Image (cartoon, rainbow, N blue to C red; front, side, top):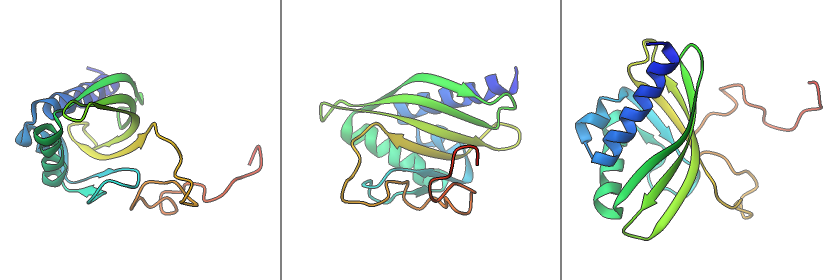
Length: 151
């Protein structure tokens, strides 16, 4: 199996574990220190640690009737990173949330180290910066302001 196919298989397995509300299965998808970043508004975000991430999704399944579908998957050739588009069906609330996630995997592509979730939602005009809570943009080398073309 190619590294990219291995990454996609791990993401699909992770979604299967989410939909099943399988706590141990979810824990097994992550490195022990895995982290899941979210846009502002989710209590307790970011979720840090495999058990915390698992507990969050199990709670969503139990209280919101959550189910998720994967719409698109793009994986790096080396399998170390991937991006997906998903839909979160909150059946108990009659709500649907769409978004994207960026994944980072461990060296042998057997565990997820990090997920950065981005929601398809209106911009929060009360906030001067719409960004993931707790994510170290500067430390990761992200631009902190606009740059000139070609820079």
